[in-house]
Length: 96
Image 1 (cartoon, one colour):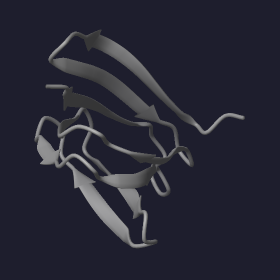
Image 2 (spheres, rainbow, N blue to C red):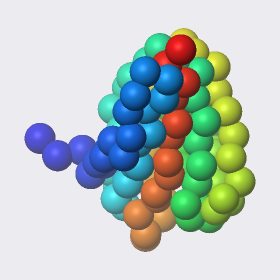
Image 3 (cartoon, helix red, strand yellow):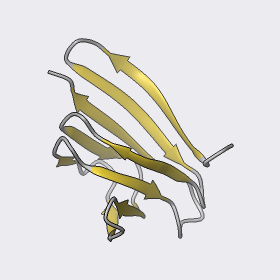
């Protein structure tokens, strides 16, 4: 079953995992939990919907090249509900 989202690990070592994510229009990264603190680096200026485990929704306004961080334990799914273009970002997890 295709979710319309694809993650490609670019680098992984004992300290970091770097993954480039692409979410196609209408696509979704299914509900997941982050075990590590992480940084997101948007590659596009766009918006995505982040659905939290409790059902709440955050509208994330992305600006290309403007990073943000989230704590370990974050649980959500990420959706490209409204954009006609793919949403692309790089996620950097600090593994240790």
